[in-house]
Image (cartoon, rainbow, N blue to C red; front, side, top):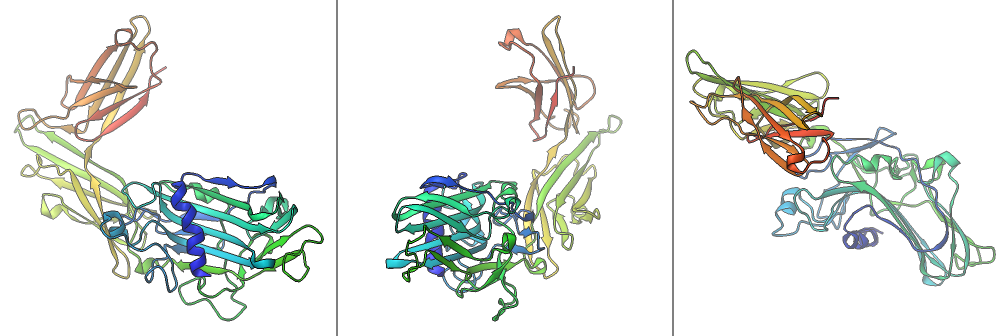
Length: 459
């Protein structure tokens, strides 16, 4: 069962590139969509850049199942690809799973039918690559059809809104004549699959021995009865036309309630915490009286509420250390730099989160100035657009280089000039002279120090 499913899931995935996939290979399709019951996701892991967990309406949260070698044991996944830096860093190859469940039916004459249900981590281009993470939920049905006719299929993720009516196909005889793959997913922030077909997670039925291994919702090496299906449909069933011999014994109905299930229960204390940067900005000013330049850096990140979070990389050593939890979902720290360090704003800081069980993760955060557009007005009489913006970096040019601000209108860019107080910039653009036939709905200002802001043109 296990090796069969690895092949079924991975073969097509590597060919289609994991864009949204919708494949149907039959005629006369009646295909209901399910109401998914995935309810949440964890913070992004700095290590693999996937959500640390997904949860369902039964309050079951599952982490990526990466125990063992990927081919035996409780989890199956593609092994690390030697020489692929992303794969080595994440601990798996092209694919891994938060959860999967599959069922197979032996049909007459050596034919078969398979049902594959999964919540998967993969990469858009196939092999692991930076910034190419892709997560999706999958429903796949493949059935060898012995005779032309109407076939009805029941499975755990039918649409509850219509009472879990079966999927109905008018199929012609042939190998995999019914061949359906429905993938719903996307890239960060990985929310698309929350509205897909997959969920809630099927898990081993606790009322039927043996019990699922501790820490898991099943053992993929042992087919087992499950719970969690929509409308209490915890089986895979096919009904063919009257008189068609599906099972080899003259019956036109075949059914199994045995599934090969994998999924590791999320263990927050013993999983390296997810970390998501919220904002890291600095304010810097030069005192006109004494010429001293001081600064402060404000950092916000999200991490699990049970984690301890600290920051490092601030050049003034006593301003590193623990971040403060805001009581909801964010950690904060202000690092003040005196005149000795005020001119030394680092490009990045390191945030370290530690779980209750001592597992750690690190996340680099970029330190940028805060840019605010304070005016964006278009004067119709002169066809002139005026933009005023400020940077939180108000260093004196006699002390160090000031930020350079640039206005962006579509594909065109216009340098802004510092006017008035330190940190204030403005520019006026004659639109017609730049080939712009109408004022833009919004404009963007970027800073050489990394900050940016986008605002709409004032009415």
